[in-house]
Length: 492
Picture 1 (cartoon, rainbow, N blue to C red):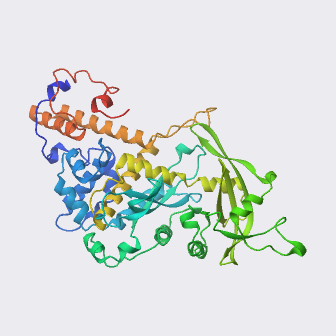
Picture 2: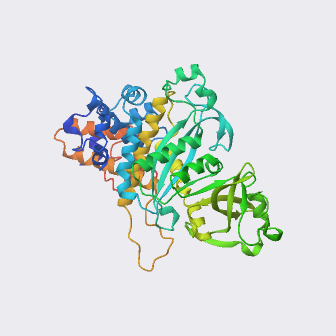
Picture 3: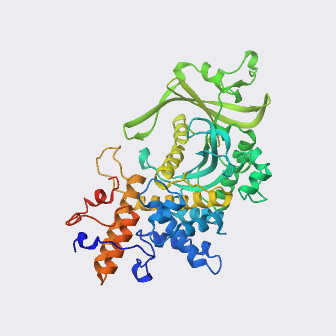
């Protein structure tokens, strides 16, 4: 049937059960994936509606559109309305922490490995006003300066394996809003943002420990904790990891981190150990012959290297040595030297340390993808519950994309290039899902018995992809699969 004959004016209405796909979702495989979350949205007499809202919200995140806030999402999802999403995200009492934990339980059997990494980091959500919960003038990594923003602390599981960096896989382990001290102590701000009474000020590194504790409680296999200097510079954070016997490789501030070097070449006369010194000073005194050009992976442009060296040392606090015996790992690139403390890897080579350090980069990539593809930072509400509900649904959507991505893995070609990509990118997976949604609707429309039903089904498609309901005569005749992305107005 020619598409042009179906593209007549029809008002999209909520589909009847017979008009919906068998799994209740327009996105192939999403019904099966999301079925494992249904009980978490079973919150009483409106459970069915809450479950439908959850699926629709995730579905909307996949669709074409620049904004992923509640109203634009509801406008694109035929089954929904803005008030439904508003209630689901802002007021509905479903437990976001339980959904985050179920996401871990769903993903860990597929991705977790004893050699995997747990990466900690935080990401900023720039804001214009001061009314959103947790917003304050603070460091905004997104803008590279102090600015008005919210900050979310998160953990990401990074799967080991390929040295080809674009093919690395990861999934979210949780995200929580950081409530700055002045906001936590501001009764008016707490009331306006509906902050629960049990929520108190916590440093970002303490939130990070809570996320790691969750990973331990759920038994997710991993090799090490990796994080930047915002976490690694805190002695109490590192001490708790050692008490848990969690190996780590953590960034530190070269000028501020004091250590006591061990080994030959770092002792004074009569074997007297030199006084503690900063990592920056040690890096300056490492003989040039000790620096090594270390290969750590393959990128889109080919092999990747960094100059590195590691020194055995004891970390110091307040000028005194502690029980923290570590490798101090230095990386030098573009006239900048970075320092890291590695504990729990006594026999690891400098190349092994560098690969662990570099292994945390997918968390930065995941932030970018969740923001650009799924609207992580598009939430326009102001409440504590609403913020956590939105980011949790984005995490579920990202996890689903990663599962679908792994299904598309191409087998390695014998004798092929080591830099040949085997996995599609997350944007490519989302594009393919959009095409699948369109194909599913077109096929369903072709099977419907009446012209009115077919017009309505095509109206759903137009609504999802911001297309005009009416088209010029013959504009859609003979449309091929290759032409479908262009017709839908999505990037190929």
